[in-house]
Length: 193
Image (cartoon, rainbow, N blue to C red; front, top):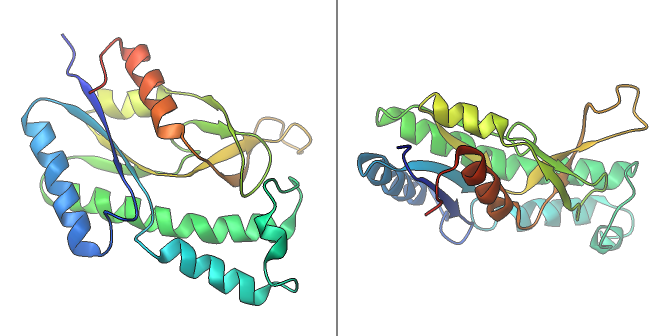
């Protein structure tokens, strides 16, 4: 029988500083010792997203008012660059978390949302998850890796781009870890939790 998959979401209020990542890493180490297959989803350190948004607000001619619109046009350069800046906070947390697991002898790999198979609507700063391809995470788990996914970005497939279906801009996501959990679990026929 397969090992049960557990989805761990460590948000910014948990990841306040590097020592907090170390404590969260120990949670995942214990899960592995207990025979579980963790999939880790991390947010940026507490305050990092706010710092990035504050910097963007200062730089934008309208003081960031346009970034508060619920959906941005797929070709909005301001929203695209803000979105890319925001992705750096989560990417940092994911890389550090994977590094912490590796240092404790647990094979791990950080993934962006797009690398993890998350596909979103072609909009910035408020995109909706359209599809989750579970194959990248299933392959990581089958290879005995702990996937550590940067928690709120995916990839938009751009039908109008020169390479149809190629990964497009990074996008803001909302509740994809739970969709991901369902798909990974149903694909491997293993209960989550």
